[in-house]
Image (cartoon, rainbow, N blue to C red; front, side):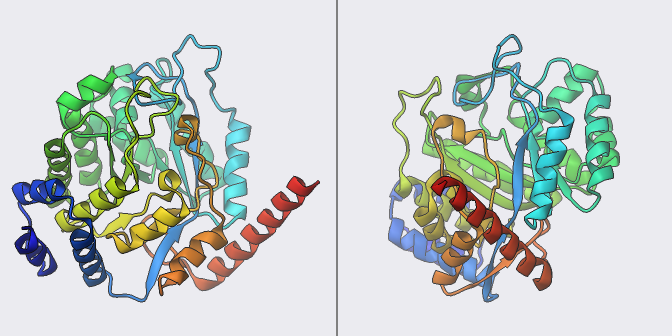
Length: 377
């Protein structure tokens, strides 16, 4: 029985890693979901649930790492490799701002040639054109790669990027923070301690970031629990994680396509356990991008308090055949159907003002109407 563990979580008591594993092994979805919803409502008693408007801009797909789970990357010698022209990148940001976005998620591969000065110029150029847009950019594997290419200390790299305009770090590239798993599914990429240390130093510099987990591949349940423990331990130390997002591995078109995809049960169940265990991470984000509208909405009853981003553009999981796209009205309706008021927020989980939100809703409806007309034509 796990009722004793669930009662502890409801009462706000910290769960041990062994208790986390017991929950993961139990598969008692209904009981765990109920407790996760109770904890989410205790942590977020407000009558609203949030979402964000941003765009995932992949400035390059060229990557020296070999990740068996990734359908997006291309080797440095590939004819399909690209580096996004600066004018196109700025145009994408301009469209995002016009649709009410206040942030871009900017990530790429581990490019073997770009210097730190190249990235500083990129950030400065973006901030010069769009000073109010937060750049949520460069996952820990990229940052770690920058230190190797430029032969510079981690703190120096992060200080210079921050000075150039980097606003926050995404939690990409975490997968499972257990080296046995990482070595099995990737080569030439940062291992667990260094991933965590990028986040640690960024937090020490006053920065914030998100934490993620991609599961449902070669990891054991004990390794999922270890991943969650390492996130919680670093959060105890720094307090720099604003949110946790998890999703299931998407195997299509990857070197791991032989692995059967984890379904909605596994996603909802694991997220609910994460809400119970990560008592020091305020926000849990739904992953409708990989799960679709209905499961993404259900996730709000399994511990999530945030529907995540409108995601005007997404390229990485789309390469693996995951093509869920929602309109802003669909995201807001999904929240309303659960009895909450939908509210737009920024990267710090601060609500945007209602006039900005109203204008964003109207801009997105006009964009959707134009898209619909184009399809009919």
